[in-house]
Image 1 (cartoon, rainbow, N blue to C red):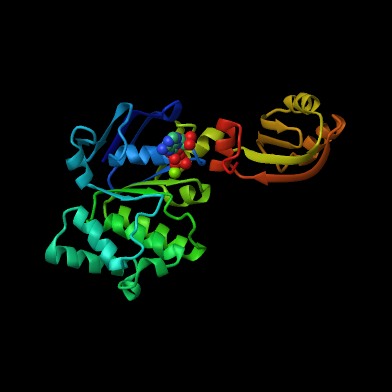
Image 2: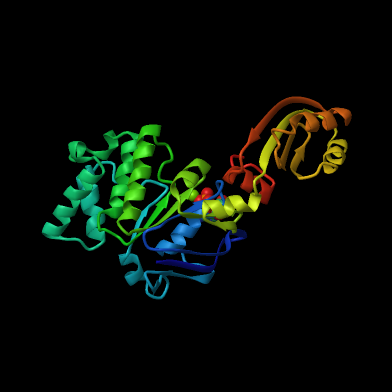
Amino acid sequence: MIEVRNLRKTYGPVVAVDGATFEVRTGEVFGLLGPNGAGKTTTIHCISGLLKPVSGRVRVAGYDVVEQGRAARASIGVAPQELALYEDLSAAENLAYWGGVQGLRGAQLKQRIEETLELFGLQDRAREPVKRFSGGMKRRLNFACAVVHSPKVLLLDEPTVGVDPQSRVRLLEMVREQAAQGVCVLYTTHYMEEAEALCDRLAIMDNGRLIAQGTLAELRAVLGERELLSLTGTWEERSVRAALERMEGLEILQVKPEELTVAAVDASARLAKIFGLLGAAGAEIRGATVRQPSLESLFIRLTGKELRE
Ligand SMILES: Nc1ncnc2c1ncn2[C@@H]1O[C@H](COP(=O)(O)OP(=O)(O)O)[C@@H](O)[C@H]1O
Ligand SMILES: [Mg+2]
């Protein structure tokens, strides 16, 4: 339903999206996971037709978004990262506005407003101005405005930012419900846990590039069955490297003056040995954590930095 080929977008000298290629199918939630500035929002804008790519192609429901923009946009619902709500209008009026923009009129519009209010649990506060809503409710309404016209393709740009944990769970359920009804969902986030919990397939984005994509299982397989060991302490980088390079089945992912991360088979079982080697190399260890392979460890492995930086 969404087809992105070699998409490139620049802002003056800044390359925001640098050759992205991916597809999203009907009934699937596809995640675009990456830190702030990775290029997620720019990608969404190029798909929704708000921005024109420098090069590459985007097709939605078979229509080229540049050449057949109107037809492509008819299939799309967008919940933008920056809330697109009229604060002085009520929830129902906001839905009426966005439904109207998408061509709904009269009885059909009215019916869809009521259905959507109910689906999103907003019917009790439907006639109140939005400026009285909590952050979570505004996020919910922002999402609701994207689906009021029952689009086949849904673009959700960090829809849970600033939302309390309970509303977040509910929002994620609603995303799954949309996909279960056959909607094609593109979901951007910088939260790994969300991507892990929600997405059928995902792409990891950094500096405008997609550095890995696949199912969660496929991405985990890239790391293998290795655990991730992170240490804090003081040491000399060169001697620590030299000591660890002698260990079998261990890969050094990053060494900083007071932080060290390695991927290792059976890291937890070999802690004593690793500590011994590091101690002999003059390192003083203050803390250690062992983590299972995850998107976080994959991100560190591919970029040499933490997703949360
Ligand atoms: N309107 C703009 N003008 C100039 N640079 C921009 C603009 N919008 C985004 N950028 C830059 O493009 C890059 C990607 O931004 P964005 O697509 O917003 O990433 P993300 O949504 O992943 O945080 C960043 O380096 C950002 O600073
Ligand atoms: Mg963004």
